[in-house]
Amino acid sequence: MLASILFIIGAVLGLVGGIWLLVVAFRTSILWGLGSLFIPPVIIIFAIMHWGDAKKPFLIALCSIPFYVAGFVMGGMPMMSPEMMGQ
Image (cartoon, rainbow, N blue to C red):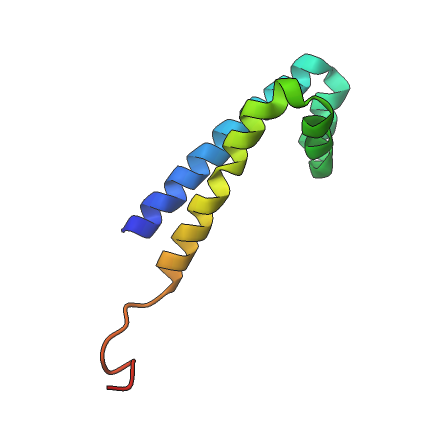
């Protein structure tokens, strides 16, 4: 249950940060926006080159990673019973 909640939190943070970053790219220029939309590494380049504008959405999107990892680790590990531990 907790793993699912962590995945959802990670998904929401990633989605909000990603869309916000894309909006910032389109506000800067249509070419930055289209490049960020269709060529994934371009959005990272955009975030580096326009750090002042892209800082908040980029960091919000980046904050989703620990939630995904924690959800994967917790959801991917079966409950250990004494039989499984060799006792």
